[in-house]
Length: 283
Image (cartoon, rainbow, N blue to C red):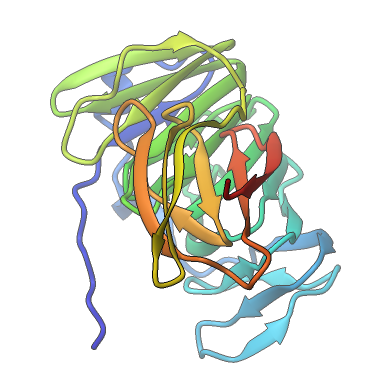
């Protein structure tokens, strides 16, 4: 049985010199030309990654391939990464492992601007984008937590299985708007966006992949309980399975004990892509 969850979307608009009022009044799509020769090029890939066309053909992702049509997607596996270049040369998208990315829109405006919209359903990406010269150009990242509109900045987002989205800005500024409220996330700050809620107030950037384990115990029948905490904007994977956390980054999970060596691997990833691997051993 396939179950599709439709989470509420908020608006996250990122850019230099972009007012909050303009975030809620973006140009109408009616002024856009749909049929254009646009693409994202795979400039670098490592590990196991796949490219799937809108027609569902699945191919191993290789350097030089182009994502050209709405619905084209890439997926990275364990310990896999990818770098995508926008055809206009405006910037790069660094894709981390266990990430799903889909092309949603690649268009031009009547004034010559470039509109690129990507969807990240899960995982982590980091963008390095120079300022646009055309005021109608946009590069947007859509997640279950919102839409990130880039106009020249360096930032990262992380998307948990429960749709929670972490936004961390290294340079530039990020304006997040949701539920009628707006929060400005400047360079050196981060914010958490929970679907259906207003963005959290911006807090100083941590970029800290620390893992605090508070309980690690065997429950019998080859099952183990793990209780702990990470920074709330970070991604957490335990035994290669993505885990959700609450608004404070707390988690309490029970999983099968992998193998017979009683060792469990945990991976923490920040929105900017910093990672730390932990080996957890039962007492």
